[in-house]
Image (tube, rainbow over all chains, first blue to last red; front, top):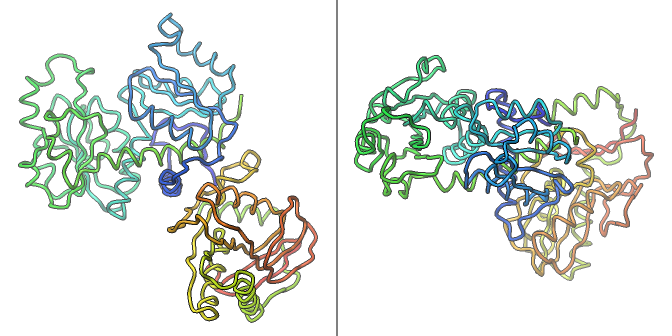
Length: 309
Length: 193
């Protein structure tokens, strides 16, 4: 089996069987990630380019380490230190990379659709590591992996995604991924941060945190994306925090064994209180560790699907 | 499940028929018992012994050998499972990536006498991959190889220390090992086109 795609652009294109294959493969990869010698020769001779037009710690590092543990040659290109600063277009950057015959290109870009644009022009497999407010499929997959690991199943669970839904590619990928795997999803946030017609994605919409987190199995807090805010979506950070910040006190409204997730990086004290982030039900660091295993699985599975250019 | 689908496609492309049965349940049992005796004899007991089966039928055979060792020597050596997919030398050539299953060796293999267990020894390439995989996990004192069937046609300088049965075959034939744990019955058959 492999995946029926050259590229991973969005989680929507994956079937539930394919998601399950990725999660199962990631479980095998997690064993490799916990060895003393963390290196297997599976992608020896393959070249992977990390093309990042936006800042990132965990996603870029995670893809880089995953590639290296699988023995691929990993090259990092950051927009800030590349020819992009000289005005090179995404198309020309893509064609330049193509001429270097990579097997996998991982791209993060502020514009929705950038990964798809590149995928149509490269013979390499393109993996979307976040494109604008569109999708961030590897994040949703590592979230599903983390949930399955902790809860033992996905089907039939209930999740609440809280915060800036409108600007969040993590929310969008998770809504699609969770639905595909049989998880019921609700979203909550200030009205200004809920996109119009969001309920058409099949989610229940709340504007009150306490009601949203009552009787769910998973609470996923989103980062308040201060870099994407136009003025006026909320009056002040303090008010946002008071209404939609998750604190130990608010958590009393939720089930005692609820799982708490956050894609990072956190604004401690804004959307999540430090004692909740570091508390016993917080999976935030599990998410990071599992991110490695899931990205190893993705690189392994997609390395066989592209053609070397 | 999806791999199963792929296997169906393969077997449709090359219609296979059973040519002969090589081992019946009693013969498999006798082979396992004899291998266990030979392991005890060769290693002067089972003190530093560990068994590592190759996914998936090698693991079942390793468990059976471990049970026999318990009867013979009074102690059951630890059994681990090794998946060699990430070490294969043909990942570039097999098309869609083969499914990676979990390596599960919950003990140290440092300074241990390791017996690798697999169902069929053929080209030797799987064993080459397994040896690479094992040395990534530690430094055993020695590694031996036990197989239920040796069908010849080696492509690498590898031989088994313990063999259930040597079976001369042609490259067009396939050896199928069925074990109760995976397949609901015990038998080894030769299949041909």
